[in-house]
Image (cartoon, rainbow, N blue to C red; front, side, top):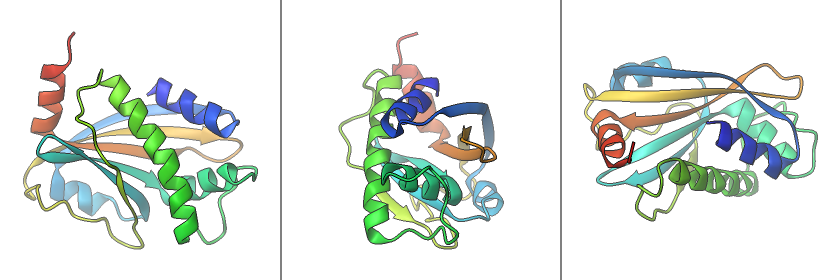
Length: 168
């Protein structure tokens, strides 16, 4: 988590602080119900499933603003244009590299697919509603803004496989 934040901080040339790390286990349907705000969603194919990355819409807007030379302030309208989504996708691809490094190359080579979700999350049809879903939340502070969240969601069996393949 700290490597991810440090990498983003260096790339954006701004101080980012890792405020809090959380881990939650719930059914996939409960996770979907709890996520009522808009997010930027990216999916990383892993084995026969996906790891999902969710970036709070305000944080996504601030990251794009900073990447394009601004001070890292979120836009009043946090909807992202196609060009802004492309900028954010570049940042997400860098995050994917950090994620792969954290698991010591356990991920197969993957392409990142991303979506700016306007109202509801994109449902992963490879997950049953009752499947156990494990989510790691990273609360980041950028500048004077309140903490905003990046979340990584794993299907439980994929997380177990990654841990099992990881040499401890």
